Length: 148
Image (cartoon, rainbow, N blue to C red; front, top):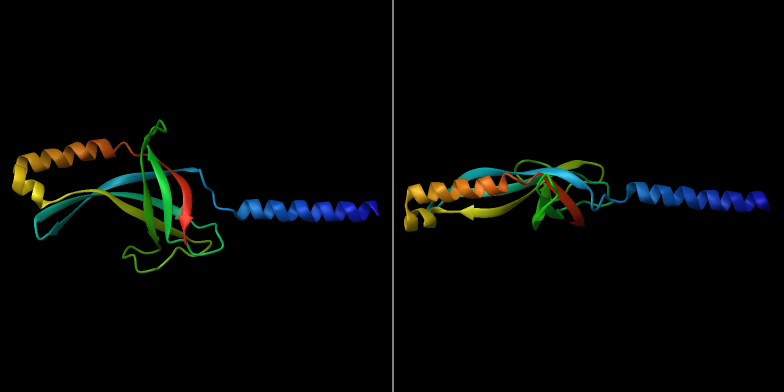
């Protein structure tokens, strides 16, 4: 009878340890960064500040997004956003499949040609560089949860 209880307890501990090991790593600080990407629209040049994170999907279903808090290297909170995830550069794959990796991105800010029209190219360049200096401080992302 004592061996039977031990086996039951051992099975429960084993199942709990498996469940914990495949649970996604919420609250884990992961490296992330902001890149400046240029584009254009009907108003002229556009500067996009894109936050990106490489994510491993440890959940049992496809992940389409990740809610994150982004921080500087001293873990000072700089903001939060929902990152959209895919497994290729074109964003054609709907989700990051279980057990695979994918890039998750979000445009944090845009500075478009309307600023250039209103303030001139010198001021537009100053705005772009000022925002880049601020957002270059992003170093870590804390994953709060996932979108499926």
